[in-house]
Length: 287
Ligand code: C2E
Ligand code: MG
Ligand code: MG
Ligand code: MG
Image (cartoon, rainbow, N blue to C red; front, side, top):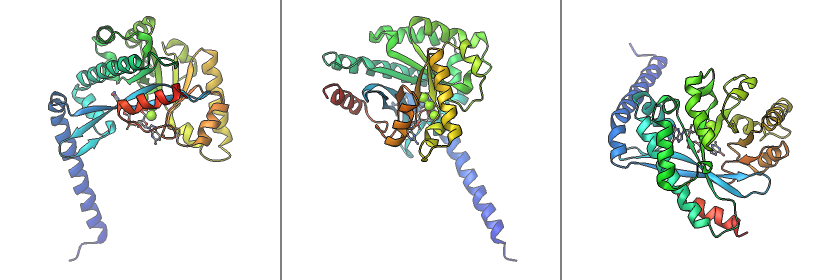
């Protein structure tokens, strides 16, 4: 008896699920050697001041050049690295590379009129609970000769929901040293806005979903009100607002009018090699 088309579809779906599980397993076991073999690399995406369009710094985004699968984005391997604990040495490597890169940019820009470039680095929740975080960060900054206020650590809103004092303590120590803490993907985590006062953050990174809704013209009036409200609350608490995922000039203009401070997205530049960031910043400092 011939199988129904539906049955074949299920078999196909099963085969794909199996293939994905096999790949996940393969990637997980390959992670430690990948770090030893230097298969990870970092791309930098500029952070642009919405008021004057100048490049203020960059976010470090890690990638894996896998010998068989080619370049893999962080969504493919960060969850695996978190699961196995490799995120701690991998995250430390990203921080060290990024801070050294920031020192290099700042040296090469010392002669130009622009503001010193800053570096944003993502922290996973596992790194927050790791006892070495503060000391590693201090050592990395000192070894590179970079001032703490050149560094911004991004932590997702969801990682800090319901955070107790033990979790906030290392962040508070870093913030007291002058490191900026940004709340990443803000607006997706349903956190209590009043809770913001309790967190040692100085920057809100508004999630891409808000930026996307500014794409439509006219933008959804409710979304406009929400962004307006978040910006005014943030500013009244002395927090700066960065927007991510800006893909068009219309979005940039709308978000600028709404009072957002800094933007990041393909409209300005895709994530790229460090020299690209250097060229963009230099071009803009020399007009
Ligand atoms: P994220 O921190 O929210 O980073 C922004 C993501 O949006 C990046 O994806 C970036 O490439 C992408 N993006 C930037 N501009 C645009 C745009 O205009 N349109 C669209 N559609 N996307 C844009 P990416 O590089 O794939 O990184 C994904 C996530 O992986 C990051 O989200 C971050 O949470 C995580 N990640 C990246 N690097 C690291 C790292 O070194 N450590 C940890 N723990 N997480 C990392
Ligand atoms: Mg981020
Ligand atoms: Mg983000
Ligand atoms: Mg995001």
